[in-house]
Image (tube, rainbow, N blue to C red; front, top):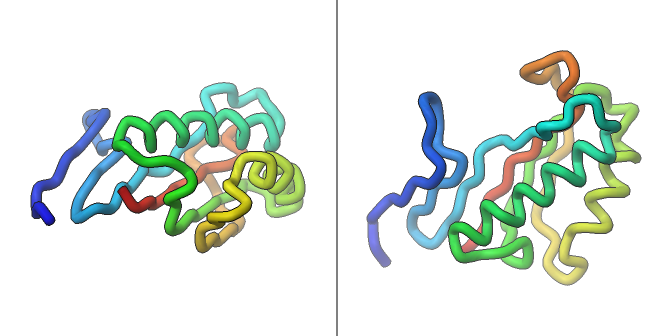
Length: 117
């Protein structure tokens, strides 16, 4: 196994995706459509995650861990509707979901994932 680190979609403050030691780390991801409901923001984020994982040569079937931050924990049911429709039912990751103040007032959800290659 290589000790090389591969970084994808790097910007001024972080990389969206980092690969190392057979593991893929995706940065916290938010929706572009901040006017959308929690469920719609979650659906947009999960589509982005699919793309980031594909970029690194893996998929949601290889997820290891997920952290989900909600601006309002009362919207967890909305987020879970999108999550349950998306997650691989045979390969669910370890998951945490917590309430937190997010980066902008209209960001309702942020998701970070880690996957095996």
